[in-house]
Length: 293
Image (tube, rainbow, N blue to C red):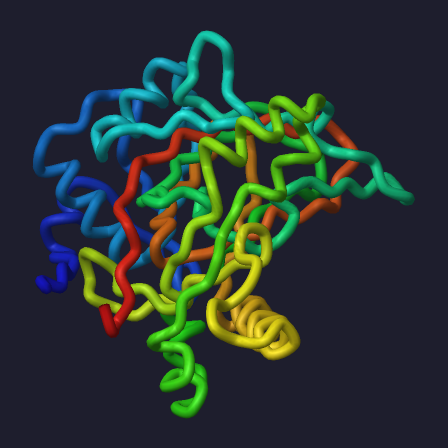
């Protein structure tokens, strides 16, 4: 398997890269994402994404058509099975008033208010996501990203040996609360039955090992008693929460986050009480493969 690395001289000739944290994350400037990507810029962005795992942009006021075109430059786009815009099925809207239930004190909670990687309920989970902010609260509403490669690498050797050959079940249960009839819930579960993914996947482009369980979609580890599975998953979920693996992004209208969904998890901080409107396109990925496949 070929491990791709970033040629800084090539990338920095096309745009500026400012690393944000030691573990992951870089701010990219000097580029207009509304314009079609030529091959050198595409290659440089892809390599930068692989190195930094999540890359950020400011002042990118893309139309929906431009947002879709940007995502499509990197691969086929998913259509979300529950949330999408009627005229733009490739776009997942995240709108606070529609998706979030108020909690005491003005805080809100939604299905993305826990650490997760996107669409791991699919047999072929997404490769990457591109999220743009349309409306921002005056305070709060940040997103935190975690390096799931570092989360695996810093486990003790005994735990690594235990989980390297294990698989886990992922499903769509999180979304059932947003469907208003039994027929819709049954249809979703029929279209997306539970899938089995490796607990540790091999990144298809870098060859790195990635901790690949998350608290939104992963239900149980195959072959373990329920109590043991629950305890191990809780430990692995907590591993991702360690702040040394994180970068925190504060949104403004026109801000974009572009993350490698195969190497990261993220958490939308529900600490705001004003309108927050974001839109995401999601790039189709491939079936995860474990180290002992």
